[in-house]
Image (tube, rainbow, N blue to C red):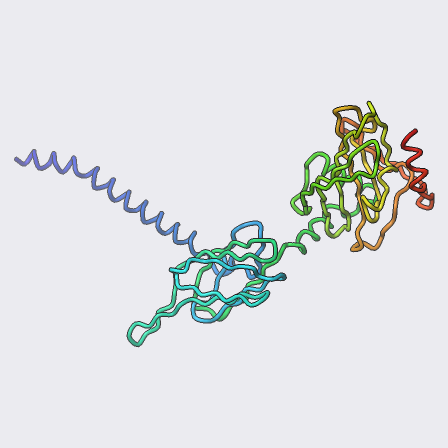
Amino acid sequence: MRSTVVLLAALLVPAILHAADQSAIQKKRTTDDQVMEKPVESEFPTVVLPEATTTIRLSSSDMNRISCPAEIREALTSTEKGVTIKITGKDAFVKFKVTKKGDKLSYSTTPTELYVVCGEETFSMIVFPQRVPSQTIRLSSGRERKIKDNLSLYAGLPFEKKLLRAIREVYTENIPDSYSVVRKDKRFFMFREITLTLKRTVDIEGEGLRIKEYEANLRGEPAEFRMNEKMFLRTELAENPVAVALERHILRSGDTSRVFVVEQRAEKQEARKLAGELPVMDRSGSSLKAKQESAQKPQPAPADQEADDEK
């Protein structure tokens, strides 16, 4: 009998130790989850960007304000969590429900999701209600950050190298996150021989540069057509063009060519136009040739230009 008890004890000890280890692991996981779920105070931002979900802190007892640079179109959250939202123009006011139990007030401690549609962008937030004073959260498009990043990218570069870098990055699809890309699909029929389609615009905020990418296709009967950079120095294609780059100069039947027109916007004061041979991209795209002539050289009149194109 005694030997049987010893044997059972020997069999039970590993199981007991295993259960204890599992309990310790589970307790550690629970502690880790709690730490992950509830960030420390210093991790709560007051400015929210649209790129990713942001964890914020709001007052569980007072009215909170969410401010947007554009009109707030909609604000959504889980209604069962006792959150009320009132939208007034560019502001949304958020209040958590307070319940009374006997003589005591009970404040919400349950995290909730909050989605705010501000202008054309949607901001995603995870809200932690806490016993803190009223909070103001500002929604930002991130334009200031983009400007700072772009200025850092182009710091110390001469104007011509800025143009070449911008065109190369768009051509190779190596576009930094700080650039603003807008898809387009607009056709232009100003040339008898080719059709141009505006595919997208890329803004480099802070540097005042905008790249317009067109796609050129043969139009009508010609078997081939030779293009040149001066063809695209037209106000219909760019308000203040400073550079043009062509993927290829000779366009044949069935071919397409990417055309990059760079314009300088008013935000940059060093506005100047390049004339003559502008930055050119060869067919392989492996190199860019930059040449510049005097800025005072007059551009040909549209009628002369069409004659040059026909040649």
